Length: 223
Image (cartoon, rainbow, N blue to C red):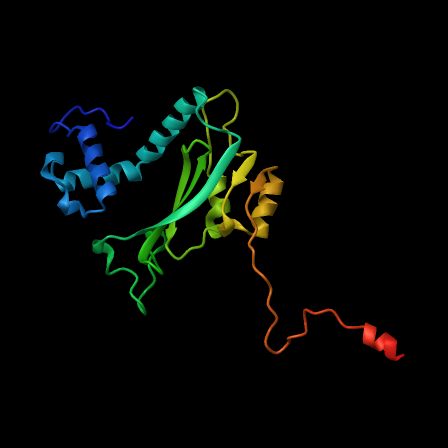
């Protein structure tokens, strides 16, 4: 699945070594040029990463993982969880998204939030922590803005019949409190388990008595 059949040219570098080099970069957050020599030339590892990303190899690996885990009954098809986290961009992207300059392309998934230049990773996983689908967005994007698009991309094959696309219960935090998400869950018979926000409504300074009930007792007594 990873290595195409090679009939001519120089021998292809070992895919396992290239994959370990990619993992090292992703875990350390270092620039590609700082890749240790034991993984081979950094340009080769980077090119392999780009090839696998562009031809959908990483998506196929995740799909094969889902097939195997689902056949063994290791994926919880009833309870899913959705959340996001922000990761700071590396020093190599420090020139992106300058204030007052042109906007960063959407497919770069880079934006400025309180943590600086960041990328937000949205993910759906099952109750066992098995990742089901990922989605990237600029760091300033809200959690709820990508919830429906992320849920629509979930597809779990592995058993006879159509792939599983919906769950029975969806767990999320207060960042996903929105009426349109609850309507989405109702449409597909999903039970959302989302805590409500505890926000107390405060009267405006110019309307201090707007939220108080009128005192009708005094008017009745005077009459």
